[in-house]
Length: 372
Image (cartoon, rainbow, N blue to C red; front, side):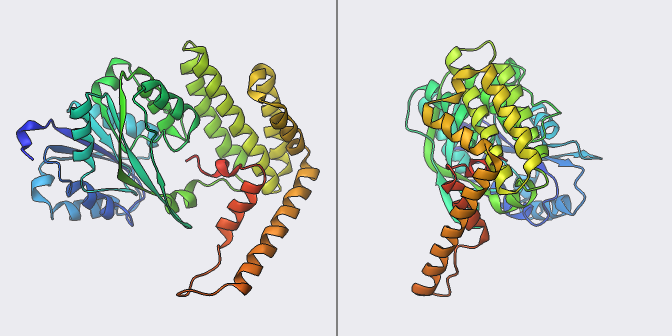
């Protein structure tokens, strides 16, 4: 690759509490096959040795280190402020986000840039590998040459709205003053990606894996639990209502599609509250769902969906159903363990996967676990 033929790209990396992960991330960005890269890291008041580890790794890549900037906050300001600061600091025409507990394929940036130059697209998306406690899963973007299809995707699919894994023109942020509100506390990237996808003229996908998302850490620090469903669920809904405000004067199709996504999310919290035996939160989320459906009647969907919601609204009846489902799943797992062979020391599914099966059986609402 001739470096003069390719524009400079900025890789933007927020840093907070990742001393055990940032070396993996740093090596993946410094070893990119693409030559023209500036690196901007933002230390969000990290309380650990994250920056010390980063600086140690930088010394091994002296040619890359010349193009590294580190912005330092004395106190934690949150991901929303960090993302905004990184974009504002960007001095190149194109940027790529990366999280410091994740990592890239070494040809990630090169693949994105080549696709952009081949197609003239505003935004280029890569496939992702999601790493969880239960294994890996590939997330692939759709096959389409229509920007509208990609926009519909981010309105209804939580895996598509992450900032990373995409090549984005800096001008798109600045021309439309796209910022993440400092009061966003969950799913912050949604607040930027949905406007970016809306204003882009052309979006394409490489259909090659570009990024690896380490969900094991995310699951530990952001998974909804019995005690925080109302708080963290409320944070996510707040972000979604901010996006709803952005869409308010946009095409009716998009407004309705995203309102249905909001309603599905609230309903998933109704189910999750039953799963965690949190009766107060169940009541609270049920009221929010009813109020939202009253305001936007079309979100309630078909007769089956409406009946299912009424069923889930009955805390005791639905709890009884979930206990029955869980008991039968446990029996099935035990039968599998006792009757199957142990190949190479393999173990049973484990608590987390059993919980996922439990939720999936209760109307496929494990969706609630995966918004980060």
